[in-house]
Image (cartoon, rainbow, N blue to C red; front, side, top):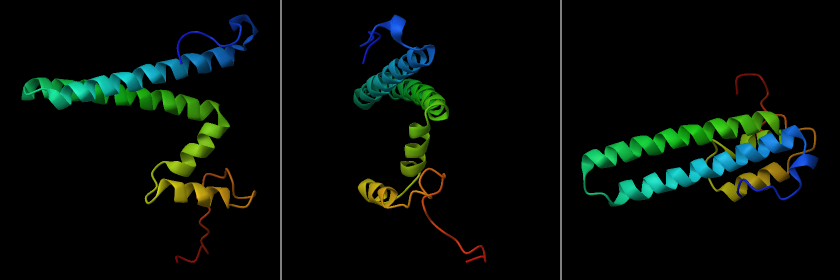
Length: 120
């Protein structure tokens, strides 16, 4: 992705243009995380390594903020982030579980785990 639109910018809604801006910015933040990580990995100077890791962590914060903006705007991001983030185990098993949920459970923010409400 780049700052170049694939469709005529004049035909895109303001929201679509904002999503494009966010996605382009997210890519840039992820690239910066990678740059800082690689540089920190190879430097022999511990002080420089600390600065580079600090800078990497700042970029992680920025990327996280953009993801949150996208999550709030796009329901599919919200649903999939709720499905996959902060889980444990095999990621594809989480996917299988999400796809086997009944339609009434999908997208309710839970992972389809029912409780009896009796402290069990």
